[in-house]
Length: 515
Image (tube, rainbow, N blue to C red; front, side, top):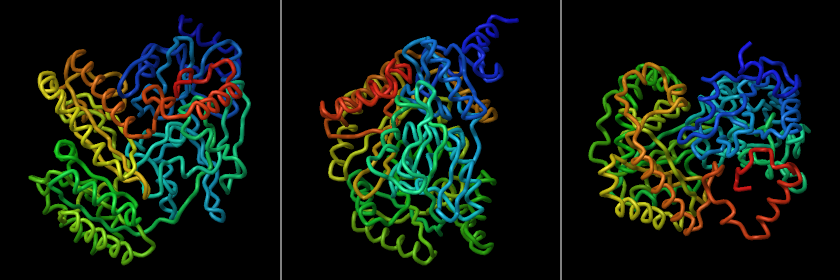
């Protein structure tokens, strides 16, 4: 019997089946990394098969003074599952992957926490449904439970973030009790207890089951637009969001746009093209739209500084097309012009692609940072980011650090600015695990580069500070964004009191949210 097996079997005193505790060196190394950084390896990775096993394992661990750190699909980059203490077990919810119930009468679906957004989409779409806010671009790996814990945004962003789709949770608390929040068909019922556990980054408990709101799948129309300046694209995005014209409304700056065009094969990837054609609703329309994409190729954004991509979704296709016509009017009023709409068409038809874009085109490391700002502060936020890039221009060039940004409207009130960094640095075990092997084999790759990584860390910190001065808020707070600084002492005291009530020994993801 190996040492790791002995440690695993003794760890929780037989409270869970031995096969649910993993402690081999490769597994521990993988689970010690997120997309950006590394922490101490866990004592073991706990992969329960049932919610009852999850509760029993958590109770046994905390009774022994062992901390609990939950992990969803592992696609985060803010230290959410990187423990500050080596005495912890990491919860891997991959075994909790059941879709429990679809209630078509009440328009809800209940799932276990380890169900991926992609799996849920594939289950619902043939039945004519989708979740109201239905996941992030990493949804092939990212899980519903992880989204409810970290929060996230992209698909369905006009209606808000993914936690806005939640009706109720079953949450395992630090002592193993299971708390059921709210109502399975209405939120809130009195004070919003579901909301207290939403976006908690695992600080208050481990999501076990989630009930989500459903909406009917609609028909889509697409528009893509070019702009010469950041102010123009921001004006257009904000106007479209305020009018509620697009289910998704997102854009790229010149650098990130060029990176995407290098990485995403819009015409040579036959699978993506065929999926897009099938999504058009009829053979004739599919052939027509496929021909347009193929003719446009990957050069249609050459010379375009900023690009905006909109997806209108309505009950009838004519209504969606009418929304695109109104979007085009707002774009032209802001100084933009229409270009071929290949990107939103292919992206919507393939909403959860492989996560190969978590590395750069040559195998560079990749990491975002973000801020959500009201529309009135977007230009100031963009200018702050540009000023930071300008101040560090020479150092960035010297170390090979490149940066771009994505913009995405989220509700009529707010917009996301997400700067993204690429730099030459060795990949970690998570990259090698998550990126497709065939894609990884084609990449040049890089060696260790601590100086470039340190510069990226500094730049991210300066951008977060600049966003905070403008009143920004954040998702995926974890151990990166300063939640306390954005709260009044009274509000922060309330969060501390809740933490004390549900986790008095501070063993549930200690340090997450800054608690």
